[in-house]
Length: 292
Image (tube, rainbow, N blue to C red):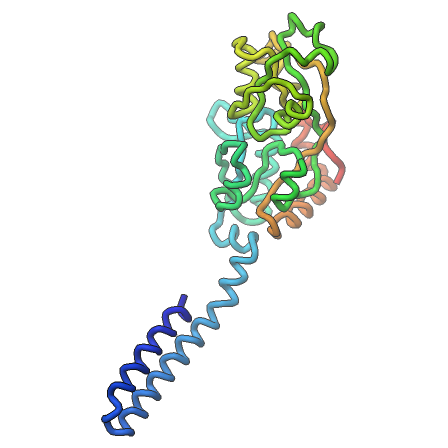
C-alpha cells in the first residue's frame, strides 16, 4: 500500500515544482532533494515490509500462527464431530484437530458450516480447513489441498427396521424417496443411481426425515450409521442395509496450503506413537483408521 501512496504524492509534488519554475534554482534543488529523500525512505520502508507480508499471504501456516487460531469447519456428525453434554465439540475428528492445533501452538475453533458451501467458506477464509469426515471426491481434491486419507468409509442406505428386508440391493431402491445431505457423497451416490432425493442441511437431518416418515430412506456415511442407528441409539427403529460404495476421508485446506503437508506429518507421528489409534478407540472407529 505504501508504494501506491508514494507514486501519486511524488507526481503531485513534481507538478507543483514545475509550476513554481520562477523560484531560485537552489530552492528547487533543495525541495527536489527533500522529495527524493522522502520517496526513498517510503520505498525503503515498503521494501522492508514486503517480505513478511508476502510470506504471510503465501503461507497458511504463517497466517494461522499469526492469528493464533485454526478455524475448523464442521457439521454435527457423530462420531467425528458432535457436542457433549457440556456443549464442547468432541469426536474422533474434533479431538485430532485439537491435538493438531496444539502441535502448531494455536487454539482450535470449531464453526458449523453449510456442507454445500464448504469450498466457498474455505476460500473466503471464514474457516481454515474442513475436518468433518469429508470424502475425498474428485470435486474436493480439485478444489482443496487435501491431506492423505486417514479413515475408510462407505455410503449406506438407512431405512426403517420394519421394512429392511425389502431393501437389500440397489435394484430394490428405485421407488424410494431419499433424504441426503446437500453437497455430500451421499447425494452424489443418489444422483449416480438416479434415485429421487431431497437435499437437507446435514446427515443428522436426513435421519430425522426417515424417522418422521417424510422420506422413505436416507444415504449417510457408514461411520455415522454405526454410531447413530440401531439398538441402543437415538434411532433404534432405523437400520442400514445396502452399502453403495467404498471411500476415504481426508482433511481439506485452501488450494496450495502448506498446512496439508504439516498435517500429514502430524498424522504419521500420531499413528506411529499410537495416539491416533487410542483416539479412534475412544469413539469406536479404530477399524476404519488408515495406516500412516
